[in-house]
Image 1 (spheres, helix red, strand yellow):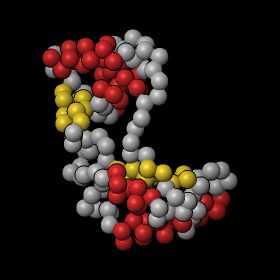
Image 2 (cartoon, one colour):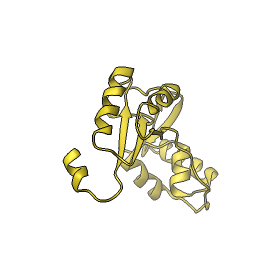
Image 3 (cartoon, helix red, strand yellow):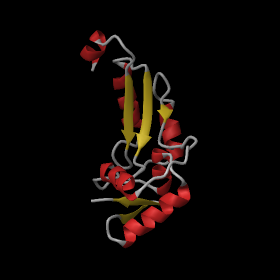
Image 4 (tube, helix red, strand yellow):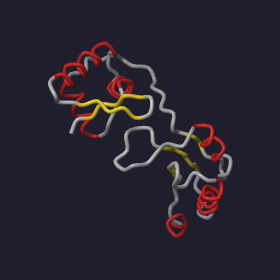
Length: 149
């Protein structure tokens, strides 16, 4: 990364993913922060697991992420909280929703925000896709995600 940074002339962003039981201690995060500082990223994003993961890992609580953010220079931005912008409420259909779910698990809010779709329409499509066996539900923490295998 240091060699790359020495030649790279544009803005360099780094994303650090914190995983409970893996790198969620002060000492581990300080070590990552020191390493990051050695190649001077312009921005640092701090993230954790927010969707159902492929492996057996768990999220780091938001309070802890905020604590870790201050260990970085520049201070890391916690990006684990996804907020949707305004929607144009286009008509989403089963095909569009399934294409999105084939890429990654999504909550209803993810689908609405990602497609700019009407929430009631998305709920109806998801209910039909689950009922027909095209999509399955998976609970992760307190949220429900939809998956198209």
